[in-house]
Image 1 (spheres, rainbow, N blue to C red):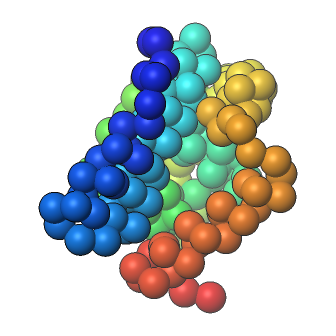
Image 2 (image 1 turned 180 degrees about the vertical axis):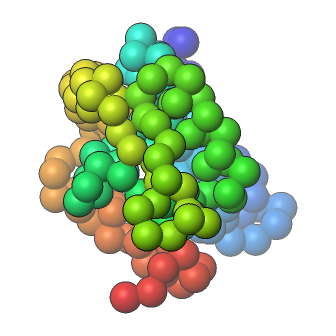
Length: 165
C-alpha cells in the first residue's frame, strides 16, 4: 500500500474542529483504531504461516504461561476476556490441529481442562519468534514511548472497567 501524501486523521480533525467542535477525542480514537488495524495486519501476517490467528495464538500463550500447561475453559475465557462460545471455537480449532487436548479435571467432574500438547508448545515457540521478529507490529516508538503508550491505554481500560488493581 502506498502511503498517503497527508495524514487523513489530521485532516478529519481540522474538519471536525470547524463543523462539530473539539476534535481531540475523535483524533485520538480514530488514531487508536487505525493503529489497531496496522498492528493486526502485521501480527496476522506473521502468524499465518504458522496456521494461527491471534486469538488461537493468545490461547496457546496463556496455556504456556499457566503453571501446569492446562486451564479450565472457564478460566481461559476470563483471562482472554472472551465469551464462552468463542473459547469453545478456539479450543475446537486448536484441538483439531493437535495443539491442545481436552482432559477431565482431576477433582471436579463438571470441569474440562484444556492442556497444551508438545506440538502446541512447538507451534507457540515458532509463532512467538515470528511475532517478536515484527515487534508485534509496533513500529516507530522507543521502548520508553511504548511503556508510556501502554500506561496511557491502561488508564482508559481501567476507567472503562476492564480491570481493577
